[in-house]
Length: 211
Image (cartoon, rainbow, N blue to C red; front, side):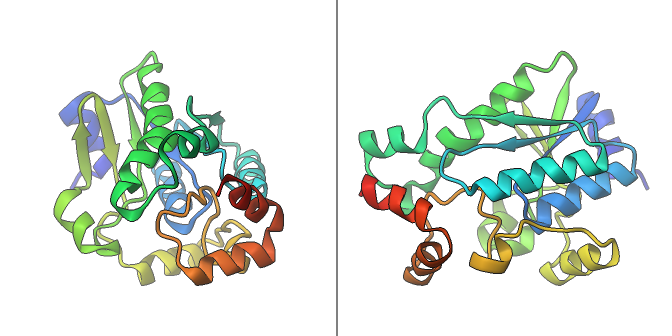
């Protein structure tokens, strides 16, 4: 049976695959899977302007160690600009801020490729019921093609893969329990805010000043 990358090549004429890295277990696992299949043509990291510097450094260092070509993307609208214009994002408007901080830079990157390219996504259907209903292993969104090689994995399977292949993750997992590439706060609970304040006071101060 053909792997998901071969299917994307056949179905959509994809020539290149680029992994979006956040520093988390899903994105690191996806890039490793693609690399082992000879389908990783490069990686990108989105500097959301409200992420932890150490997460960006982790991705840069790890890509250098693996010999993966890395591109740093930056949104045209910073988090500060978004907040000053629209206020702090709520759960209801999470897609709006993500569209500005992540989706637009990603779309611009793919559209600038000379070859027909796809994004390797770490989305998994068992992360949430919503994703299970709306996502698929290969998803076409306008001109964008997303390929999710671990779409059917459980969280346990993902952690097992990380351990078996000795894959690292962002050091922010040890402090705040997440990759730390984006702290826009749309889903932050009180405990998350406390952890950020304790572990990353500079970032917490930036958020407080915006408030």
